[in-house]
Amino acid sequence: MDRTVLLISTLLALVGAVWGAVSVHRGSRTWWTLVFIAGAFVAQLFFLEWRGQMRGACPLRDQGEILVFLAWSLTLFYLVVGRPYRLSLVGLFTAPVVVLFQAAALWPGVMSLDPERSVGVDAWREAHAAVSVLAYGAFALAAVTGVMFLVLDRQLKEHHLQSGLFRNLPPVRELLAAVMRLLWIGYALLTFGIVAGWMMSHRGGWSHLIAAVAVWVLYGILLMWQRMWGLTGRRLSLVALVLFLVSLGVFGVV
Image (tube, rainbow, N blue to C red; front, top):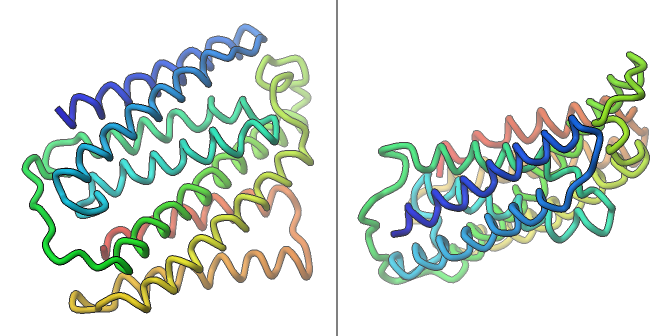
């Protein structure tokens, strides 16, 4: 049942991505992408609730659950942050990432079919895992928004000013402002997650916490550098994208 719900969520995100791409190609904007992604979000909530009941804890015990939680976090930030910054078109870029994460989670062997129920749940461990992955959702959306900036920058340089995608992309300044806000939100959440990580039991070792601290340091360097010396929009977007891709390696030591 849980995999069926996840499959429905993935298909809704896929339809949203395709619908958005077709609409942009025609030079128009559509609310249907937002509707389909919101539907995918609701299905994600049902899936996580179902797995949480099965686990008796936050569903972050295997790679498949982590991927779905990350997809849910990314979708959450799109729905909450995207609209105030008038970045509804970011759904066209967000939906394929959600599809990719959830399709990987559905791959045979990635997610346990019969999850083991947790015993003696550590509240600090639960907080560390949940808030840290939530931070990755903000970092992921920052990377996606950075990709939007790079696409807009390329179209400006190549003078593709009449394309449907160019006409529907938000202004450059708005994209860069959104990238910075998302990076700061993610950094604040990751900071809390690391504090919770120090407080939890470390019977399983310190490797995952050390990896999280390494990511925290890298993002801290980026934010400090941007604040003190500044980066061009292209470099900021590229670094945000590369850092997110590199930081995914943390899940390899969970």
